Length: 451
Image 1 (cartoon, rainbow, N blue to C red):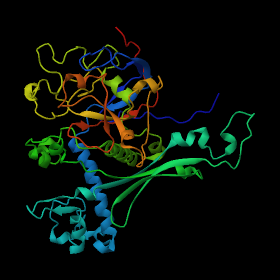
Image 2 (cartoon, one colour):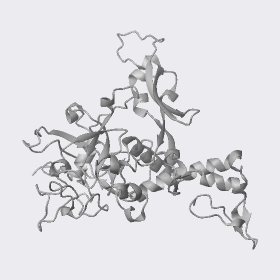
Image 3 (tube, one colour):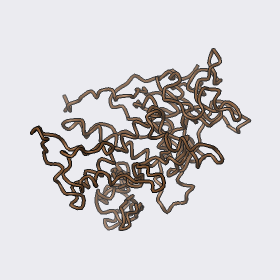
Image 4 (tube, helix red, strand yellow):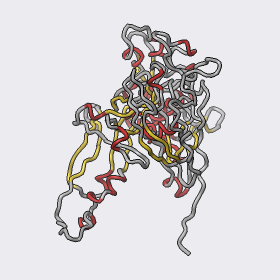
């Protein structure tokens, strides 16, 4: 009996670890009078989700930047001002063999046989900038702009936002006004005549489902200057020049990425996956997103309330007095753990869930908006507090929860039960991120969370 839908088993997402559903006590596991931490845990449960085993690396984020660069080049190649469509025609070399125009590799000179004209070469080179002092040619960060839209399914589902007035109230003693005006807010963005990104939150009467489509335009290039802006009177110029682009740092966590840029990466990563799938399943897969604060803490503590770090010990060293994470063990002593700044991802042992660097290395963005009350105001099932701050909102309302602590933090701030915040448009040399995806289907719950 019943109507069944076709189902499919989604393969394990590459580079991700399945965190099974379970419960734990969220919040500080013990008091800390030195830092003023009060023990006020709250029992919560979270559903199963996939989580990146490591932080997003420079190499992974650079793929996002280069995809954006290549998209800009392709658009300009279609623009008559940059040579029209000729470059997309099949070209033959001097031996009569077909060759593909090298649209994407802007670092490699185009052979004479492959050049349609100088205008096309100009389109490829137009995403670069030349330093007039040093003559260095680099990708122009200001041009790396990613545009995307998201549908606010939650806002659309709320009864107060129903298009049919009769659906807004279930109480039959209340006479519904069919002419009631429902005001909604939505995010929109555009580029003005001066080439500037204009982001706005507009409020207007509800008219259609399209009112729940939010549009964002984000400059996605990391801020490489964080290395000098975060540290006054420090010789960090080398990191500013090389950290994001030098191959020696490929496997290091990306930094200088804001909460807004991290969300743009999640959207791009989702679309990249969907383009690789066939059929109707591409629209049914769960999106990549930032973890909620509860998901991050649960994953970091391996689902165990008694863990204050990702490992079982209450200290930060192992049996052989080796440090278990990349952080700042002593005053002015960054190198005693083997690293001065960030470390390669997975340089330290994973926790019981198989996750690396859940403490230290770089602190990580979550999707949760920051309030001092924290978990107290959240539900005890999949707890989360979201607030999409409008541009006109006070800056203090644009705080997002940051978890895990970083390479520059003392041991207290790399604890799994400690929370802090940063502003959503801020970029730091010590904040990165990783992605999660809700697991669809069934996974055995992790029920033993206490000693």
